[in-house]
Image (cartoon, rainbow, N blue to C red; front, side):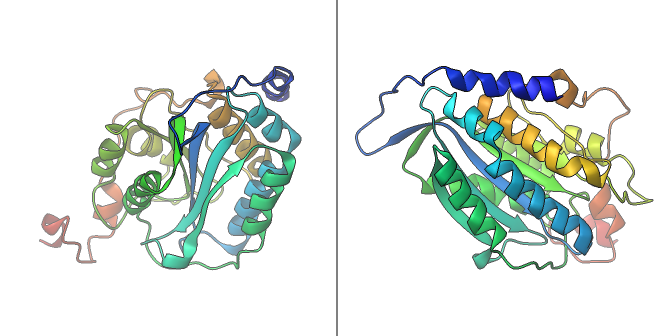
Length: 267
């Protein structure tokens, strides 16, 4: 794993080539949205590890070198937190990262956010919100990526596959970081759920976390892969490796709640 990261980092030795863009539009290598689960199923320790993992990854020299190795030598990044919905104050808006200084500036904003959580797990709402963020930029990205991290299946809101398909048809790639440190006894295959129901688009991947000690390295590895556009075989969970996953299982497990998208669940 470390060898792969060093290989990606070494690409920074190549000076980026300027890329032409329309007047008023800034060319970037990737427009990256980080969508982070803060639902009540995330305990305080998991939430702190997740936050620290993103902050450390954004500050890490290998991430910054991967950014600098692209055609333009810069990316655009945005961050938001989600649970059953996305609240107005949950967003860190778009920022260019092209240096250690700009990466640290974004990491500082993230580190300063208060810890909080609330009910529901709506991956579908997170995908829809993330998709909408791409319409609020003046960037021209070679790639558009939504990075979803979470510890449970969609259980409220529209069907997750519908929102995924609506995003991927626009050319957006969705990658997943399922957190399996404390897996639910009723939902043990979250990595397969993410592979079959959540992620999509060319080169999309799932990188599961099984232990607390993996957080920082996994998040850094994921960000480097997304920024560089290089996909490692070890990061991919084959979609056809296991029997098909029920993409509505989270909603069925929560059938005692009324949800207008799934009226049959109330019967």
